[in-house]
Length: 192
Image 1 (spheres, helix red, strand yellow):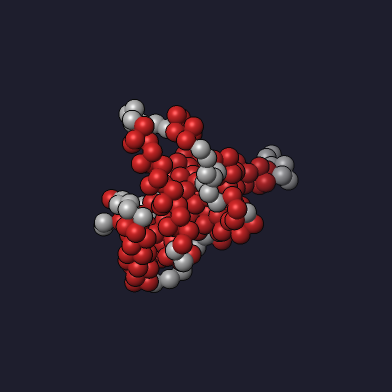
Image 2 (tube, rainbow, N blue to C red):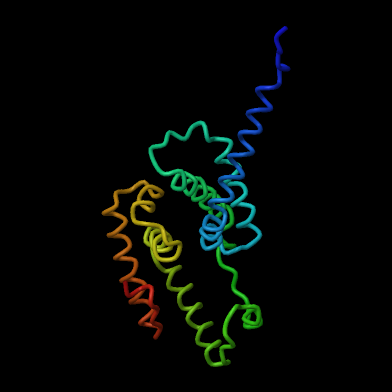
């Protein structure tokens, strides 16, 4: 007598495999991917939704992953497309400017009021200067300097050669440095 699995047994094992893949992806990449998304859109709750959506999309389309890049690069590509779609539909939500009362919730070592004011001015100047950069320069600067992606990872996500990433990054840093110096602001990550 042989055992015949029920007709939907394959569906159940595929579902179980997808659940395991989803858990593994989330465990390994959640923190960094969430940080990447929130830095690009600036809204915590929307970033959580997009992060979840990126993982769901990755599991749903995993069969199309050919292994021509790192799994993390492929996952960031999915996230980047979601971010672009989000920003194209909600460009006004990219930055969320608030008053100084938000500083009371910042993790810090008790900055004095002058330090708080300087920090607020720097953030405002940086946000304004970033907005003035051409989108391609701003995008590569945020990927490499803020999200800490390698040049190669940024090149894959942007579908451009590594040399183009280096060139755009160099021009972006120089332009941003000049804009901030004009405002009397100097930031360490632009010195690299």
